[in-house]
Image (cartoon, rainbow, N blue to C red; front, side, top):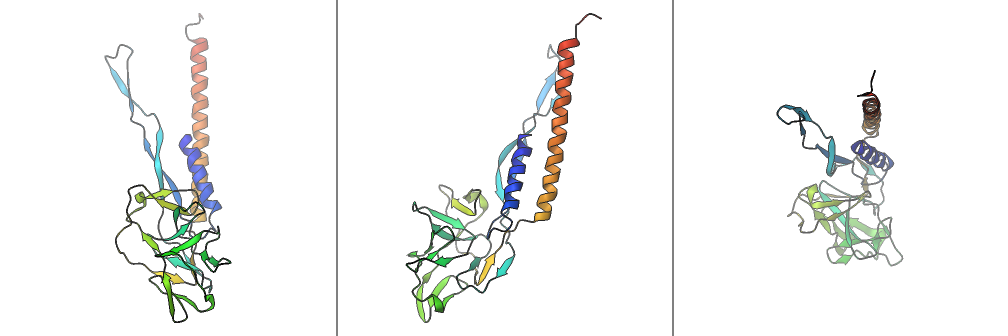
Length: 237
């Protein structure tokens, strides 16, 4: 039942973020406990095995690309596959994100919706002439004919290298190294929308609710059986 509760939390979070830019569907990974052998009281005969239920082993993220939304906003960006934009939070931590909905602050630095500065290869990206801004498919930034810099984009080998959070941010695990050069495609004027499928999430939520109800009934039946055994077994007729 604990697994069903956690599955419901994950599904609810997925549905809550169905309209969040760059959000990736989360799932839990669960495995069976090692079965327990059941034998007679004197242990001379094995009666069989008894399942001890499921245990949560970890979490996974569906890293497939979400649908692209054309916005015409030159500060909106999308990046493909296992490539991530990098932002710096207020504590100086570098966070990875697929959310490329950016804007400019009062100092003309590129920021995201949380006010975190977007990083280029040489630090925060600053754009003095946003009206002539262009960003090519490799993340090179230009304003008019003047090169401004290049977006810092981190590529990972697989999701096992990431620390997964409930938000749209990720961090590299300790010891994990960015992947070598892979195909990076930055798309200006586009946003990558969530890859959560609302219909499938609702269907799975109904399945989890039914599973939870069945488990509740089984536990109730076991309680009633044990109660009868304690109260009636051995009592004279």
